[in-house]
Image (cartoon, rainbow, N blue to C red; front, side):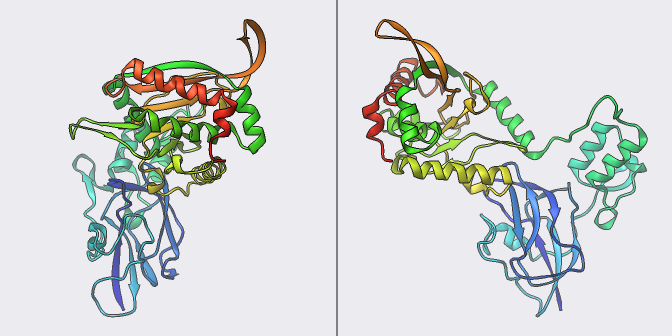
Length: 394
């Protein structure tokens, strides 16, 4: 029998760390190759990692709530065979391969050195748990760790905070900042600070759109996505990325539409790839599948990669209009407001018609107001035209 250490694999998209969500096995269990091992949460998605070995699980190097760097030991297995390079579950985790840095790190054994606090003596924990303790006013030297090797976990700190009265439960509820929420906050702060973005609004008479979607039995969203991809063919700067670090602007030949999706874990943006080559019904099915995966926590990071422009359906929760923030390096984001009867002037007369407000936010470094206005006007014309809608692939 030989011991093999499995490190946290490289999950792709430049992710450098992940938080352990829940172990699906326990120390001492016999585990099969590719059996679900652990759920981890990255800055972009929840990922289920399968076992790279068949054998007995002899040690878990991290507990639920711990944050690990890519390449840090995750679990130790006892497997049949001689010492040597471990055999990984090929392709089981996006971005992880035998030749990757994470795969090479599998050959290490033993747990990483415990991080200690000189003022508190020898306290083994992670930086994320240490920060939580500071936020809650918990003295780590007084906490008994229940994690592997006596390591203090997030749950240990939260229990200590409750027991010591560090938080007045009657007044507030303490909710630790999740990795997804922290990433959203950091990205939005950077966007507001660094990007000169402008939002413009247009009212859309949805009479033609409502009739068309009823005919196809789909929601307005996939039609808007397909129409936007069509507009990006003629207005290429709408489907562009601004990359100042490279000194480049990328004009994309294909339109990969990020769909802002509300989940319990926060806002996620899965991508409908190459929307301009797909039918409306195909896009509708893709959006439903991505939304379900996002809400169930089964999206892979590669399903949120490569977007070139974003659409958000603020009307899904009754909002008439909004000022959506850009998703850099993308140059534009479109918000679809709620469709409801409004008083519109039609041929000089006021009529009650279904209508909505579309909001377009664009990066002023990429698009001037006139160029954005022309593209936006063309989109409004398409969505309001029976003939142009009928010409879209169904």
